[in-house]
Length: 194
Image (cartoon, rainbow, N blue to C red; front, side, top):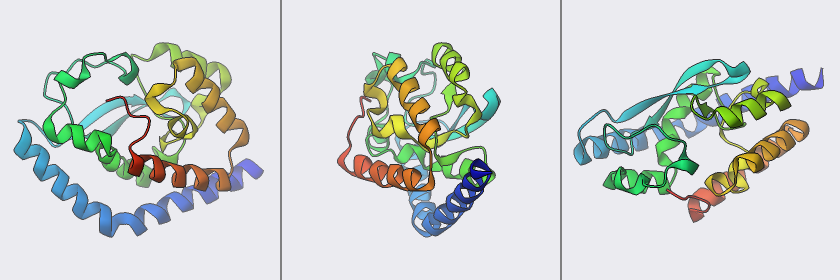
């Protein structure tokens, strides 16, 4: 029963925060889309196939920060990412503005503001570990406990442990803390490799 109420209130909080932020985020998204189109050929938004709740696939939008034809590799394994990142892409990745289109997924319920990051299909090892812990039953998030505790600077095993800790300790107060710490880390541009 406690989990039901938590999930219900979390969903309401997600919707309220996305709608409240819309007057700022919608114009910002329009400007970013124009800058991306002016910077390099290709669409402004990149749709990435991701694994969501209960290991079901969904299409996750991001602002395109790389040139067309970039290899599909997990962030921690991408050693030559810099040669594929566009000029605008460098800025939107460092500021995490490339994640803004995912607010649409929050509205549709495929994602939450807080939860384990949705995985790429090629990230089989961490997916297997998430299934073993039951983490894949959670709604994936734009940010999460692993993101504010190292993001791309932590190992796969550390991410799974952090996600498992979040699953066992999740609450609205923890979610609000993660949102606040995410904003702080984004403003300070911490824990971003590329």
